[in-house]
Image 1 (spheres, helix red, strand yellow):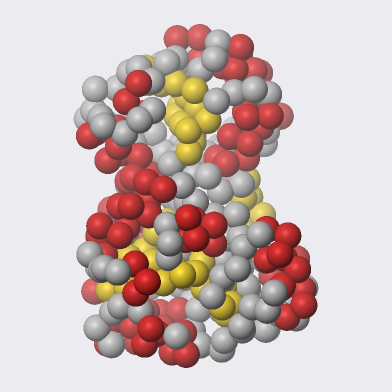
Image 2 (cartoon, helix red, strand yellow):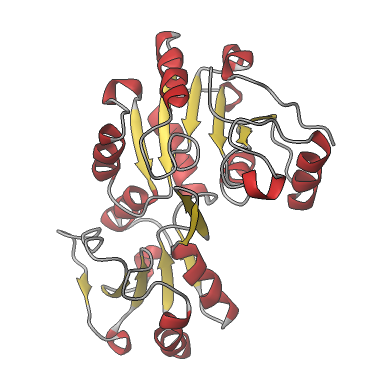
Length: 290
């Protein structure tokens, strides 16, 4: 297996009309947006391309839009944002997405302070004891409960009652300014290990790609390229949706590949990672740039 390594998106852009861009690890890594990424997205827009940002952020799209605007991404640089939180909100509100529409109305929230408003205004209510919950709504970890160990008792109790977890961020971890942090996906992973049932909303699962393609409004799908740094999320999600993928190697994979963000990876090491994951992106790029 050989994965082509390109230096800039301009080498592929003519082949596509629409782009689904990951945010964390591609546009920023917790700080300001990368200048070369901003320039790249601006070049796409100047070329008349449609752009949708797809994020596993477990909060509403408008919140994500404000966050990335504060980081330097003006709203005119994209057509839409779809977050995993927004996708979950859409599904819960519509009530037609199985199995979310069969779980009941009372949920126990696992989230950081301030991340408790995802279902506000809908006919759902949060409960303070997991014994009263119809399902777990898993947004993420908190400063008060920053690790798996601090959730073991709650998760064990929920699993014993056969309570389904809805995980609104399938990411296991992110790299924030060089430091790895656990995400909701880590809680879901543990819950599945102890026998709990999990419904995931976000990459690499089908709902978010279906919604993204609707937002792009581009047919055929061969004219859409997904760009991301997640070998467990962005790349398999694109493949399952029949979309080409461009792998950014300077994000989550940088440490494993032994490179800095702008360094091209060793082709053999990259090929081995892709082979182990049984994935074959169209190409790889060190960092999103034009």
